[in-house]
Image (cartoon, rainbow, N blue to C red; front, top):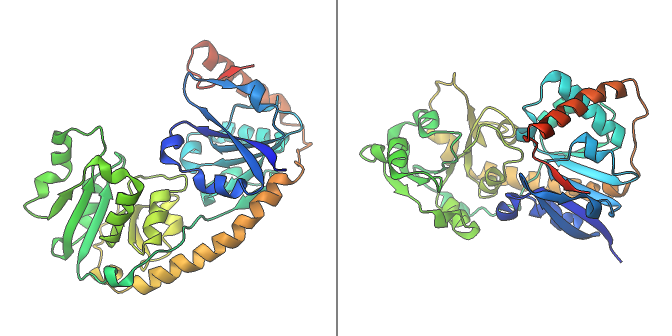
Length: 344
């Protein structure tokens, strides 16, 4: 009989299904009960506390709540884009708390490793890759077909200057659902005279249509400046696409060199050469295959680490400073700006 595990995730992931790949791994050994939390939505703490195993995806409860989970085997997969707000002092206190609770951490970014530092926490470093599905016959395009899903963080003007206009065949542009036509025109459609722009409707956010559109393109523009994992980037890599992304995690961790993609920032003035894209399809296919094989091997380590008895730090010299975090939590609760509401 499978052991039971509580899987706690943020409610938006219910639609994006970004945690499904890790659930698939866990479900081979555990019976999963999902808990979705959202702002001003009560979390059944008493029900969660009945589980011996608890897995947190992306977010984690405050220390004041976590310390009530006694003698539990807890694993957490934090995302870099959710941790970057922490200043140096509270970051130090935060990881001391994680250490004291014996929480094991899956690290999907080098930035998470950097954030944890030398703290005594059991961790596992992973790079997630999807099974490659590269049709080299379809990728033998002479020019550039660019896919850009506008998510509001990276704008058209941030990346369009990287390309010589004469090298672009077509731009596939998927706007945010809440964008009005005026914003869409300002972003890209007013450039139709210069470029062949295909405006995609929101139905292209469906998995099947999204992936089919990727197969028509050879360049993928990463839509954010920071990513926890960057699943759509990984999907694009699995299709053999050339990735253009901002110089931050996790884009600059997946883009190994200019055969795989190109990273940029506000100081970039280099133009992308057409040869970077059209002469390296085989290389990117091999890159995807090699890293997918590494993922298959490394993911086998997740379950043994999850089942392992927790190693709680016995260093107590920082414990008195935890009260500062307690005060912050209390003030947030008083001023009703805390996101966590619990049924005890």
